[in-house]
Image (tube, rainbow, N blue to C red; front, side, top):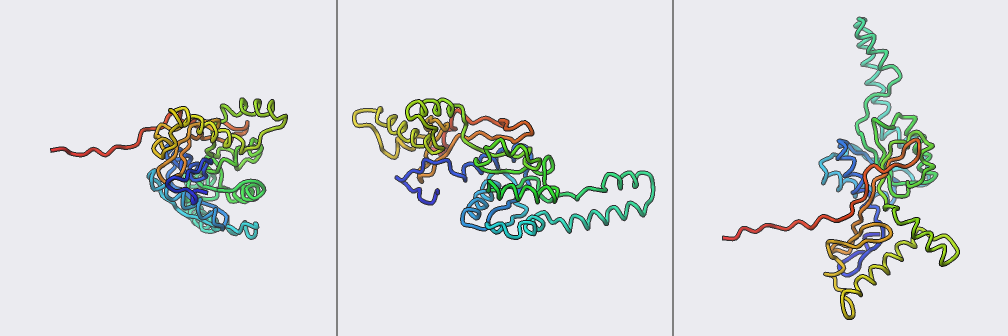
Length: 287
């Protein structure tokens, strides 16, 4: 929860806002600039949509529409139907087919054959769904029914989508999500199991990285340097969960990888950065 961060109070976790920033930037770089959101009607859902809106504005896109559904799963069908403007798309498509049929020429009838069975153009080409588990499965079923699927629409999600089981659902194939790189996860898991004779929890790497950060700051000299200047070093730190650094306001920034869900499982769409860019420096005119 980034709301607890403040100068001098640093959040180490992998914030969903950072995940959204990373995956929105990737989608925009792929030429996908018309965004939509389908989120739970909750404080978390509102935060995720706000994070998407801010990220989309930074990367030159536009938020076409947004819809919020009941977290208890009530009326999901109606929410997805409204989001996709299915009745309007169908009416426009039927009018277009009727006009082509009225012409009756060979070219027009060939166009009718292509359009029949189509659901009409979608207003957006990217859809963020900050949810997972059984609710995501329910939503994906309705999305498929209303023709929201790749390649016309790419789904965006959070690190909780890091599950090869999702590849079994056709609607999820082609989806993108950002997560921590797992290059060191097997190393950490093996050492943890060797030390404690049990599998590590997902949060164990954060605890390990916190101690590694403390050790790094201690090694800077007698007594160490735990100043805000040292902790907010723009070069950041390397942990089991990849590269990370802290902003002056206490929020974290992570070097995240973007994954794509395919029929065969999970593929790396773009790797995590290995270094951070230096902060922008204002150039002052000197007379």
